[in-house]
Image 1 (cartoon, rainbow, N blue to C red):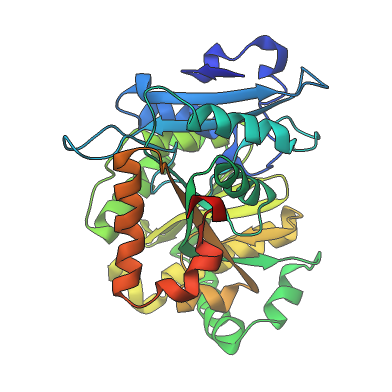
Image 2: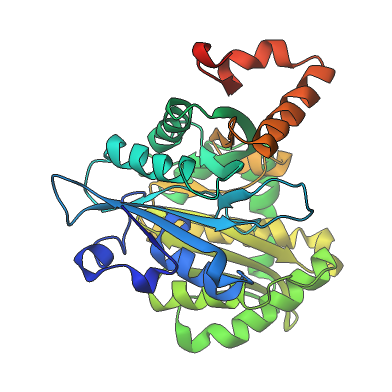
Length: 370
């Protein structure tokens, strides 16, 4: 059992094997966390990467990257959180690719956290897939260490499961809003000699594409990125590894819409989208989405297209399935601040009349602790 302050400190014994984590998702990979720490984390000394190698196979490992949130007031709890924020669409442990997830390693990591001195009062981990085995193992491990655990909903995640269809087959299965309206807009876009669509994938073309995307995004959402180095860092990481698909729709020589997609391990992730409001009547956002779907289904052999966060109505038109993204908050019942935090969280639910129906599944304690 060890705790590292950065991924650079991880021993060579398993640092390379953990580079492509068994989660398969980019958002739970070493590359993702390294870019996140480099561009987002203000105090890198607060990062703690809890690591436990397998007793049977020392070259395999499980890692849990967390962040000490610090206390915002004198009596606030000492809180440890997932190394994640609004950029993170999924959080999970990292483990050696192709290895089984040893539940005893997860239990050892949680035991290290729950027995730390000085004691942690609260641990919060999100967003996780609700059907994730590691998510349930974390809940079980905190409960076994006599901490109270509360589960909570984060957001709906919409995705399209592709049974190796080409784009025409996909289009035929969609609603009329996609099959007719979006398709007609895309055909009109193609007929206009002043319109064009490009997909940037290479590092050499990236800087201009990033500049165009950033300007569109800031203009559309009326705000600047709070961590301006994060998205360029992610885009460069993706371009260097062949994962970047940055689509840009041009109308009359001007960038009208942009789509930041990532294609990795057979999954196409729709990470960020933006469009120029001046071209709203041309449905340029839908046209760009149409073009990107057409590209990844016809040329990328993806098995899934993931819209990541949110279940907006327009997203449901494009997708076929949904999953719930959840989180957990664990409270230390042996500390005053931990117990007070648990009481505050549960008390809020009680006042709203919801606790009775949620206690069994969402606030787990052992009978001997009652």
